[in-house]
Image 1 (tube, helix red, strand yellow):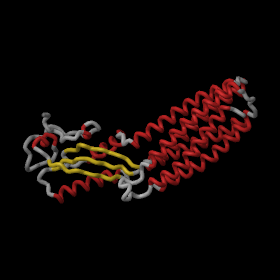
Image 2 (image 1 turned 90 degrees about the vertical axis):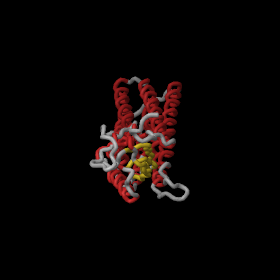
Image 3 (image 1 turned 30 degrees about the horizontal axis):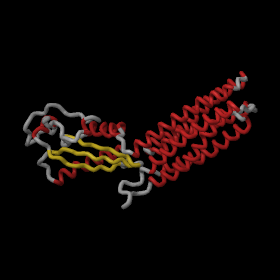
Image 4 (image 1 turned 135 degrees about the vertical axis):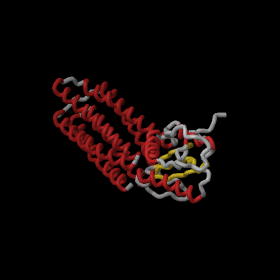
Length: 327
């Protein structure tokens, strides 16, 4: 978590420098396209500091009032960022319309292009690095900020390309066209960030996360783990919570069942670097479980093994043991 907090702090401070550079370029040129880029950077500044605060809050340990920790602060931060990105896009479209009716002469495009291009390159490199850290740390706040930095860089490159064409052709209307296009792009980007954060707030299932867990379990499953069902996964900040039912041989004593639970927990924690909490309910196997049970030399086997059931996104979500006849 310390790595995520540190990189978010750098994102906040870096955004201030980029905003200053773009604002300087706009002041020199009066280009609405460059102003578009600068307005998007204001969002980076605001959300950078909001994210810095929220990720620091999310790192706090759980307490009596927050039994699952403070991780959802990251979702709220990402939601604010998405809303502000979309708002920046609307402001850009407003500026385009205003400039259309109140045109302003463009100046020093060559200098403005160079300054804007430098900010775009720096944006891309830092966004690429921050995104790597975000995915390693599983931080939604840093991922949202890093994604915005990279999308900001792409829009900067396109704006620079358009301004170069404008510089050599003299087509003043192109400045407004470029700004309008990227105003719409920014609105779509904001919507996507907001949509993802709201999904986290509403505990929407993370299909990819669950598939990653199941890949590990299928590769390293034990023969004693007869069935896995009624699985739920929720991620709060950097902590993944797994709630599932595990079917074990009915004749296992409490100590044996506990050992199997810890084996499964340790397997997942080793893969996810100790950021997983498991809540496992034990079910005793039934006669119908024999058809999917791979335990060798089971003393209580009633039926032959039909096939080993591969756990996948569809069958682990069911709330009944597999192999049970349909009523």
